[in-house]
Amino acid sequence: MLTKAGANKNKIRVLQILGDPVGGIRKHVHSILLNLDADVFAQSYAYSTQACDSTFREELAEIRNVLEDRIIPLSIEKRPGFHDVYNVIKLAQFIKVNNISIVHGHGAKGGLYTRLLKKICNVKAIYTPHGGAVHRMFSPAADALYTFVERILFNMTDFFIFESKYSAEAYCTKVQKKPQNMTVNYNGVRFPNMKLIEARAQDFSYRNNYGSIFHLGVFGMLRHQKGQMYALQACEELILGKMLVLHFFGDGPDRKKLEDIVLSKGLGANVVFHGDVREVEPHMFNMDAILVPSLFESFGYVAVESMSMQKPVVASAAGGLLEIIEHGKTGLLVSTGDINSIKAAIITLIEDNEYSNRLAKAGKETFYSRFSQERMIENIKKIYLEIANY
Image 1 (cartoon, rainbow, N blue to C red):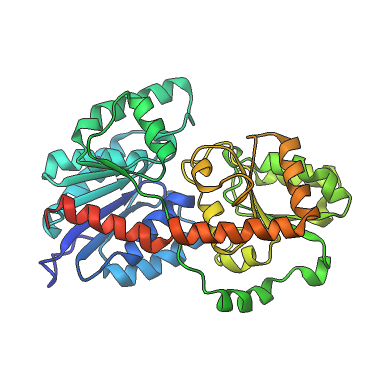
Image 2: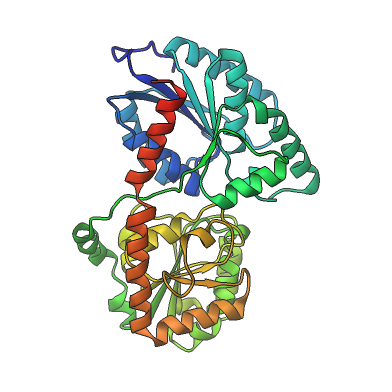
């Protein structure tokens, strides 16, 4: 929808572009859209319609109320094609009609559109790399192509915002350049209302079915990169020994494979697939501990959310997770993809409740000091104001 700039013409007009609205990148962008100071900024939102799950649709309804319909749905595909030309033209028209001055692209495709729009519309271009722009997620040929494109677009970027030091270092290594205008702004989550969460958690309580057995939660899209297969293998003996119930929250391409393994090994009674859940916090509240078995993470939202809920965390020593968790003090780090390491850490939490509680308490203190949503949003505000010379 192309709408005329409204009455708030003195506001700084920002367009957020998100090419793949799933997981942590979606959480990050939606946090900005819903919490950035509306008295200073008028935001718009362009997103891909290719990956809109039920959670996204519910969140979009809330965002629509805040943005007053300044929303541009696009058919954004991962592979480059003529659809990209159409999308950029449509966005350029929107920018000119709505007097957009800052475009913030998230992820590789969002970043591509943002830098092209800078050239076409003379706007300020901010880029936050995620996923494929940081990790080696694609075939060597595809990775080489995307890296080549990033190098070309590098000098067309006014400011880089990275979600972790790991992301910044990985990106700079990949493009073989270091931006002069950049910052690391850790993702943050809101302060939880524990009274409301605890009350709501009663509706999802698993204690009636399983008693006092240890409940371990794994949250995230069910795909190879998130490492759920290693979680299942590490917990197999504990599940069979009735020491643990393993909960998977999320959906994705690996679900059928995981369910088949659970069925073939007779683990079904103590492995639960919840699918996508809209209310993550009450489910997390019901867990005794959270496992983040990812093979790589540019940040690690689930770890931060767990710490905000004062839950002990076991996480892979990978990517941004190393900046969130201090091993033995605010959580436990395990070798990536190491089944025995994961199993040993879980047994430690099961057997030493006092140590588990100590980790959880220290984790919550770290969350308050470093990973709050308020801190993240305030940093974004300062960057936008600086870029706009406001």
